Amino acid sequence: MQSGAKMADQNSIICPIRRRVISEANITVVRKLPDVSKIVVKKGEKLDPETVLAETETSPGYRKVKITDILGVKSQDIAKFLKREAGGKIYRGEIIAEKPGTFGLGKKIITSPVDGIVKEINKDEGTVTIEYLPTPAKIASVIPGEVMDISDKSKIKVLANVSQIHGVLGIGRERSGFIKVPVKPDDFLLPHNLDASCQKAIVVGGAIISRDTLEKALAIGVSGIITGGIHVKDFESVGGRKILPINNLNSDVGLTILVTEGYGRIPMGEDIWSTLFLLNGKLGLISGDEKVLTVPVENAKNEAPPDTKERELKVGDTVRIIADIYFGSVGKTVEIASVDEILPSGIKTRMVTVKVNKQNHKIPYQNIEILE
Amino acid sequence: MENVGRWLPIQVDPTALADSLANKILYPQTVPVTKEDLYLEQAMYIEELRKNPEKWYQNGKITIPPKLSTIAKSKGELMLMVLNALEPQGVVEVENLGIVITPDGNIQKEKQVCEINVDFGLTNKQKVKVSFDEIAIIPIPEKQKTILDIHCFSPFKLDGKDKIKLEVEGGQLGVIIDARGRPLDIPGMDTQGRKRMEKWRKSLNAVWSENG
Image 1 (spheres, each protein chain N blue to C red):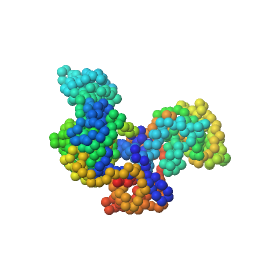
Image 2 (image 1 turned 90 degrees about the horizontal axis):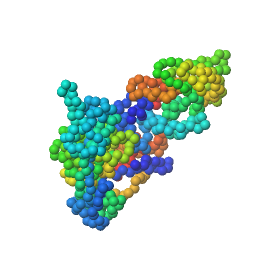
Image 3 (image 1 turned 60 degrees about the horizontal axis):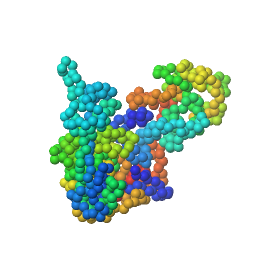
Image 4 (image 1 turned 135 degrees about the vertical axis):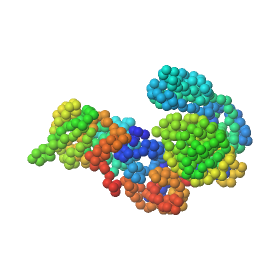
């Protein structure tokens, strides 16, 4: 996690740096592979997009079936109606649960939507989780480059010409797809924005994506979604675990999600959206676990960014606001105060004036990060 | 999320609350700007302290967690957060602020918990009556020693007794009587819960003015 801003002395503020857009640079891309992989490339090897990096077994994810909602029963009673046990295999169409009707009427049956293994029966939530059956897979390079290092039996470092978008949150394993940008940065990504052409695509959203859009994306077979914001409850519903407190989720429901701004309805940063707009139609790799989208490019026009994590804030710096009502806004530093000010909350701190869309806002220095 | 929400003195949309909490976890270094931001920060820290309250007790005295002092706007607000987070029982001294007296017992209806005769050195003793779910301040000046003649009403007791005489010294807030019972019946996130929170804040002068 990023460290916060601090006062270096009475007159200078050290702020964390966020590099969220890397454009057409020659950098080292880290490919994190599933644990069961057998890596078949070697250090120094040149990679084409079709080069097989590793052989593995992947589970495309899991589905949670809400028994209580469908059968209309209490969560603690679901065991009475289940026809399966945890750990057993189940195939698409087979019965998971059944509730008899009365006098031959009103019988309800739930069948499995997928081939899989019954991973968990949760009597608190009233759900059954089915993990998709693992299938053998070959992991293609997708990104041309050169293998620089192989470590931990699951990480390959590749030197490549790429553009990257780094998010603040993500869920789901690495997937590839063609980028599609159907909405603007402050729009909602709605179910009608997704159609059959989005199958296996990486769809770029706007300010927020809702649960019903996520479900449609799963149903269509979308590979990944990039969104500015998402509500906690919707993020948890595709992650399958509680966010609060936040843990390393490392889970996959069959869809990879990358969130660029944070929780709630927050327009996607203009820098990110415009980069993605230019990459429309290109093939990319999205990883929720690593919180990054990587798109191979032909030539590197820019230098690789430096590794510095923080530096002194200066007037003229582009900054992003990371708290309160201006959360996610990007602007230029106009003034750095020389004395502390008392906020309405009673907190005493040094203020930074940031110009956002021609309007000046005073923001506590702890609530900004430098964008480079 | 619900646990944090119940400590807020204002009603908040649950979705917005969950998002705010999650963003605060994402960016823990940020500082609260508005009073609503501060309420959230206070509520989060109260929940954190409730996981391990024993850490702040030593020899019958409560040491105030340093972070709590930085996010309280008044001594009354600070004391309320200490009471909510650490739930002291019996007779406990809270560092600098004063003695807190919490009769043992619980009940789910309005009832008088105790009656206290306070000898302020005047002709007549002053009588303080405290009902269930109330917090009261006995305004004993700081460092002044006073005898409290406490009569608890069933099922409440103090130190296992119905009647007890205590010599206490006033702190910065005098002496506090916390008659909310133990374990504390924490307010829900509904309107009734917010009313109870507001009542407690008023009792300890922890309500902010319009100017903060």
